[in-house]
Length: 115
Image (cartoon, rainbow, N blue to C red; front, side):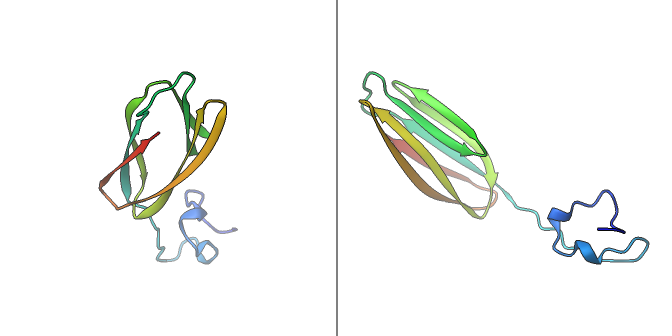
């Protein structure tokens, strides 16, 4: 990447190797629109020892115990499918689930998980 300006981030462009310092050039920088996921988590039949673990991705997890009725609002990338991965722990059993939600750009999408 010799000759590239130090402030340019190569991950934003596919043509980093065609940048020449001191010359006029056009770069296409692709930005993803924002979208919001309004996630409603509800334990409709609470049992002793119930737990749900949501995986946010990138190693981030949220654990909820017992009787849960909570709403989370998360900022995500718009115009894309998102996988919601969660595990339900009940009666010494673990069941894993995956939901796919499409989030349109610049909008809030409601999704409910009942267990």
